[in-house]
Length: 45
Length: 368
Image (tube, rainbow over all chains, first blue to last red; front, top):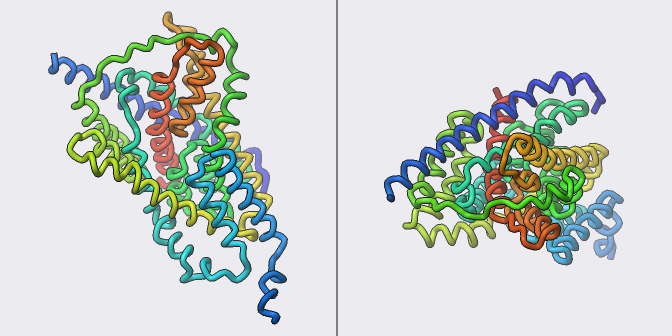
């Protein structure tokens, strides 16, 4: 095990990609949920 | 007569220390009621695997076979996900889908810890350590296995993932208090729950599976088993299967999982300086996850007319339902009329989804 502080900076883009990926997936799920709610609550009425 | 004491004489100091750790795990499970279903078998298993020459951890031994049959191929974590999925009621989340954004924000600690851990470890090990922040044992096991993480630190990762889940009531409140003012903690939220149709509840797990699997195929099996569990709960025609998954299946798998994990708790593997570092980094991940959720809520409050209680952001980790309950209790402590449970549980279940997605993202980044 070696201590290499430069790796922190090298890994930062992965922080960005990872969080972006999560927000994209969750965003898509949120939109789908609103769509599902809109379709099936309307049908019920 | 030598055979009566030769095993005792063969005990190393590392094994003696591991017995102590085993006793602590058993104590925490029984006396403090901290994740007893896992910590008890893990603690007792730790005693077993640190007996010199014990056959259970030999190549054909019972615990080795259990480990190979259920952990090495990720079968136990995935089967446990069926039970977890069957336990989750997505109702509060479906009634207020925008709560899911906090589940996403509360995965920040995972990726921040990834950067921190990479200063000490290789990519795969750093990624496996970071996923401790998901507060999701099955995901942690699955990711560390798929990334072929160094077996020397795998035990510490599994222990940290499960014990930090149990330590949510100790870890989260100080972080939340540090980041919020009393006034913010007293913010009341609308408790009227919009009705959700049964069709939406049935389609929701299918939609989540399709979206997550298409974006992060590495996590498809994790999402599938979680959502399959939820589908049998909501479909309305498999009630007995749903009950079996929630109780019998989840309990059985948890027992085997706890005992199998203990094979990683041998003194020679566990008592390394790197173990302390892994535990410390895991704690960082947990703290920054909590902070990520709270800070996003505070940021949104700068723009919203109807303010959000920022504490609910902290429930975006997947320690379900503990984290949601902690936030609710903290709200009641500040204002006995402030009922945050519906919102905090909604965020908490979104954390369950987001942590699996985070696992998928980690795998996509490092497995290509």
